[in-house]
Length: 438
Image (cartoon, rainbow, N blue to C red; front, side, top):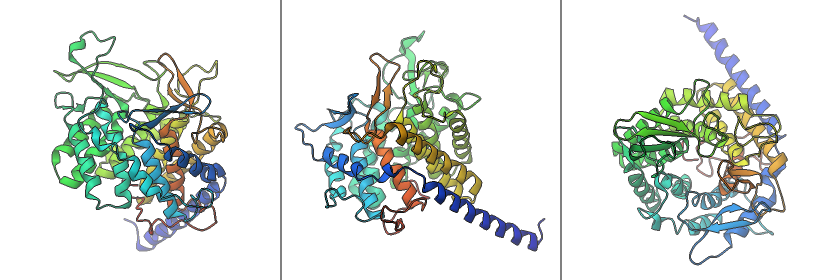
């Protein structure tokens, strides 16, 4: 047992190390790209928000010259643009005046609410299957600012009901896609689950918090545990798709739909895993999810090249593989989530490691994906380089969303100051970095 003097010394040493680690992060933060807070970010997003379509349309992907293509609200990515508007509302709260466009600050909150307006009509009337979780994100963003908004809660609950209806007890997961695998020996019993689906579990856990209906919680935990068992290799690389037999729950095959090969690790899928298990730990405090997030983070950091993040960790090096800025930004946000968890547990060494990993990815991305001439904030994302035709070197709504969100994390955590040199005030905005709603 430690003596009282030794215990006090240990506490003082930990505190000193924590101060040093914080200073180190702030110094590193000073080297982060200025493009994070470039006025063009708000200007580009506002230009999109001022677009008007009848019937409603949402940005889906840019051309390879940076021009947005717009599509139906019935799309898994619909929630990202309204969520970006909410993130700019948070940015304005953190750093007043920082989101002004041509001298005036737009009403980002009202724009976010307006662009969320077409989403409730998708309840039980959409073709997105498991991705109703992604669609519900603007309502989670609303609750991040106004936790008691019952309309936002009701929308999340409704999407959670739809998602939970896709659960099969025999498999232990919610079904991702409704079709069968082209290589399945018995397609009639196919039950496809993709790693992306981890991100939709947050909707179930939010609904559980609102209703205390334990079915939502149990479905999320079963899905997370089954994915942890079957989607990851011994080195913590991941398969994109696992095909189960819906009658027995047995695994029939593992393969990729968007990565390089069935044995490769698709970088965006691995980023979903990092982000997903970090969120799961925030909601449940189950140690196995924190362990998973740490192991995935180590894998990601070990395999990320110095120059840029490719669309697949195992894509051939020649010719040079396309980058995926969206995967980099999702992973950076996952690293920052994990760092906040470590800080809450006084693991300053782990927190510094993950913060630095996020800084590296953000700086990398700015070096190759910041393109002022494009309508999107970032270029050089890859939606799908596996299928035909390929879609790489594009702008994507989720890349832009996470670019803004990563900047907000850095401000709210004190790693960066506002553009005017003042400290951001997370408490003034009601932002709790240790909670899951940011």
